[in-house]
Length: 381
Image 1 (cartoon, rainbow, N blue to C red):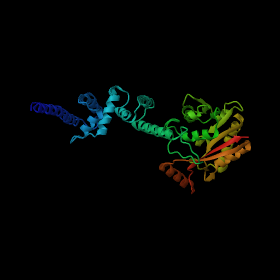
Image 2: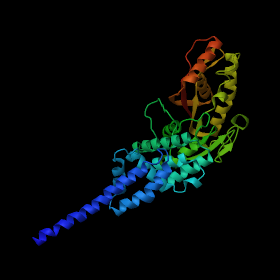
Image 3: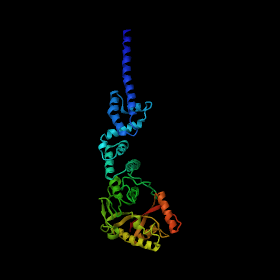
């Protein structure tokens, strides 16, 4: 009988342990409800400074106590929000002293797991004066690129047919918002099909340095050597050079592969604004420019060297000019053999399409607008 009577206080003691736990959860939930729904940093501070110590004293895991709180009747914060606020304050307790608006750090804390990557994004956002939309797009694009890397053997999205369509540029290559930025996936595929290990590659229209970024970033291409030129370089790894004035500043017979992506206004005398230009004048201007460029390509390439160039058909005044076909004739005339042709569909915005239609109406023509470029590749005989 004595032994049985001694068991009763044990149950009371157990009840005492339960009551404070349940009471503390209810009180914590009530206190959390006093925070504004968008006051994430203060909410995170409360969770880290007060709720988590309580959880540890009760022998509970952090996620467990957050789930208990979020399940309380009338609580306005779901578990996912509480978890994000906890991460936000944990990673950025000094957020009010940092250079960017607080919303940047909330996104970094909740969308980027590695501290090294968070630091990199913070530096880029400060340096390039990003908006929050820029940061979110960069994080999204990087995550997408990493998923692509996991699915591909070569570190880029390899195409096995002659239509290379890419919705968005791979964020690893080139600079965001650069006018005329070519998706790096196109250059990566060209390097895969038309270059070999240890070859020397030159890009006379380097733009924002996409080709160099590809070779520097993707292990598959890191045995290639390269040189970048542009008439208006925006990166220290790009040398200043105007191909029309000084040609390609490389020794004769020294280059294995050339990649050319001339800007549209460079290659086409008219495609939109100059309504009076004649087809003869446009073709003559085109031939004059590109005959000199192709001769330079022939000079600097080794025997058997290859050159790829991107070109698009367009209108001159009211007449259609097939610029890719014109290029093919010029390359063959100077001593090249064509070895490849790839179609590059463009993503044309609805606004751009309306502008093109309006221009055609002003010109008094009814025709299909160009929505596809061509990547032509030639080999020096």
